[in-house]
Image (tube, rainbow, N blue to C red):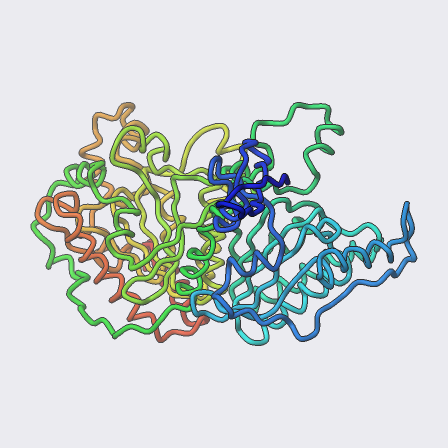
Length: 560
C-alpha cells in the first residue's frame, strides 16, 4: 500500500490512503474500496477480507454475538521448523487479534436466526487444526440442537501440518458433524471464498446443503502450482476458479460479494416456508375423461405438445412462484441445462421445483439440448430431490422432453444408471411429489421426473413409451406411419386417464397453453395446489406407500 499526501485547503493537509488492485493494477482509493466491500470498482476483483469483516458483510447490523467459549490451538507435537509452532501461534494471535483461524457465533440474516462461522486466511493461512475443527463441530452441533440454519464461510490453505495427524483427523470430525446436521433436517450453506483448498475443501466446506462460491475464488484440493509441477501439463484457462467449477457441476451458485447476503435471506425464507390457506378448487383437475373437450386426433395433440412456443418449465416457474432460487450441478460432472431445479414458493408454500427445460428459439433449444437430459441432469435432479426430503419440501416437477439424451458421452457417463437411480430415488421420497406432463413426455427420460404421488397432464400434452416416429420406423421401416402409431399408442390425456397412467388432466386455454401462457400457468398452479392439499396430511411412510401402490397397480395382464 502506498501513502499519498493530498492538500485539502490552505495550511491543511490530510493523508489519503491508496492501494493497487492485485488484478488490474489500478490505483484505488482505500475508503472507496472499503465501501465496496473490498471489490475493485474498476475490474470487479474480489480482494480477500478477514473473518470479522466477512461476518459484518453477511449478517444484520449489530446482530452478531460471538461464541461464549472460543477455541484456541495448542502445540500437541512440540513442532519446530525454522521457528517453534508455539511462537507462530502467539504471533498470529497478536497480529490478527483472533483466537485462531475462525470466528463463530449467533446472528440474524434478513431477520432469520443463524449460526455463522467464518474462517480467516490471515491466521496461518486459514489452516485447519484442532481448534478450527472443534469450532466447526460445535457450530454444526449447535445448529442441529437448536434447529438454526448454519452459514459457513471457508478460506483456507488446508490442514495445519504443524499439528500432524491430529489435523488430518479434523477432516473426519467435521465431516461427521455436517452429516449429523443434514440428518437433523437443518439447512446448511457454505460460502467458498478465495482461497479454499486441501483438507477444508475435502471435508466440511463441500458437505453443506447448498454451495455458493464468491466470484473469482480459487477452490480445489491440490493447489494449481502443485498440480502443474506434478503433471507437467498446462492447466486449462480459468482452472479451479469458481466459474470453472460451477460449469462442471460442483457448485450451486457463483455470486458477487454484494449478492451473497440477499441470496442467503431468500434461501432462509424459502426453507422456513409458511402456511397457506387450504386450496379446494377441485375443478382445477379433470379426473373424468368424459369431461374433456371432444377428442382431437392424437397426432394433432403431439404437434401441439411439441410447439416451441408452449410455456417451458421456467416460464411456469416465473408465472407461478412468488420467489425461486435456481440451484445447479450434480456435484460430480456438470450442470446439465436441459434440467432446471431450485427452491421456490407457490402462494407461500415452499417447494422444490424440477423440470426439463427446452426453449423458444434455436439458440436456446440447442444450448439446452432440446430438453433431452444427460446423466448429470438426472443426477442433479436426484440430488435436489434428496435435498427437498431432508428439509421437508414437497417436490413439484414439470416434464417436457422427447427423451433422455442419446450419444456416446451420455452412455459413457451411465445414462441408464442415472435414470434408474432417479426413478428409484424418487419413489422413496418421504415428501409429497406432484408431477405434470406439460408438453412431450418421452420414454424413460420423462418417467425419471414423474414417479409421483399425483401425476397430472396438460390437456394438449402427450406421454408415451416411444415417439410415434420411432415406433413407426421400428414397426414399418420408416416414420411415415407416425400419425397412425400415435393413435395406437394412446398417448393423449383422455386415453391415459382411462389407463390410470395419469391421475388428472389440467385444462388449457382455447388454442393451447401457447395461446395464453398466463392462463395456462394459473390453471396449472391451481391444480398443483389442489394435489398438494390432498397429500398434505400423509406421513412420510404413507407417502412412500401411496406412491408404491400407485405404480404397483399399473399394468394389465391376462386373467386379471
